[in-house]
Image (cartoon, rainbow, N blue to C red):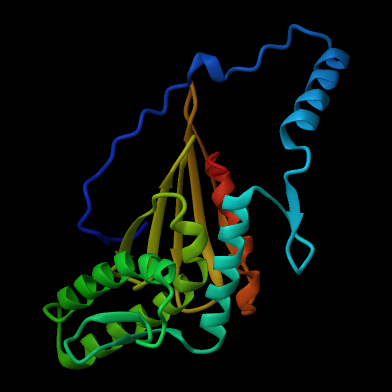
Length: 230
């Protein structure tokens, strides 16, 4: 990928070796395995499911809380309460002062700090016209990034700025490494890499999630490539 400006956060190393305890052993018959699986599902998840207004099945109080917060987040975007801007002090703000939701503020805080640092660095890179163009592109990318923050912030993302395209990058670690590039439109470029015993598996492409804000939840289809579901 192109040059990038990393967020000022400590780097984390990840071991890509396989853990023997995670290897499935096919010793028992498939019939016995199916019976055990049915018993486990029946005992563990019985009476724990409920449905949202859109008839989406959700399990557990924690998941219900997250769904409610995500829906209120989409409401805030659609009403104009969540829109990237620059305040009088030159700092990036993702939401208006009228937004009081503490969870929303938490999701926004880390992005606001990093975006402010990126824009400050851009002020030293060129003339006023070049700075204005780059800042505008960053704000456009932030507008798209806000759509996915509820899902991204659940997975300890590492953000960076692509200084050639001014798209915002997101790197997530799981069984492999997933990298997303988010620009000013609803397309998300993705690249997934997983180390094997011999060589590395790589998958890349472009996901088109439409301009409908409520389709943003489908970002999980990309996030699950890295093997982390929670």
